[in-house]
Length: 110
Image (cartoon, rainbow, N blue to C red; front, side, top):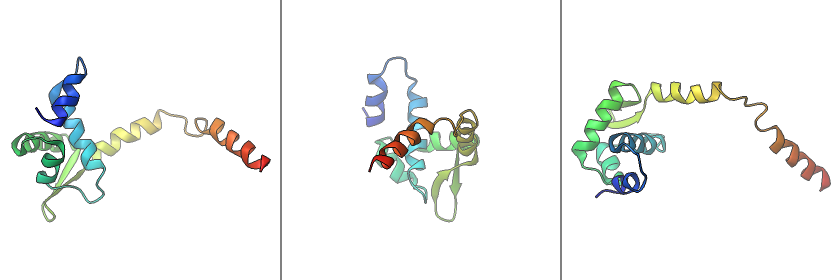
């Protein structure tokens, strides 16, 4: 059983293929230059064939991009669009206000 499967099976109601795909996406997101197929499959302890199928599915949906020159997988535009949806649904000015106010009070005391 792989590391990803261990995490997935420990939680009830999880869809293994979705958990794997999100793990791949998260792994690529942590690398500014992207990752090679072998690096992804090794890190997540997935078979390269499984990893490749997941990557090509994510590529079809534009969540990842394959750079032929560097042979690395990188985050795709749809991942940005999805993340941007999170930002647009939050009031980013009001959200940190209590934290900033507490920091200002602490700084004034010093």
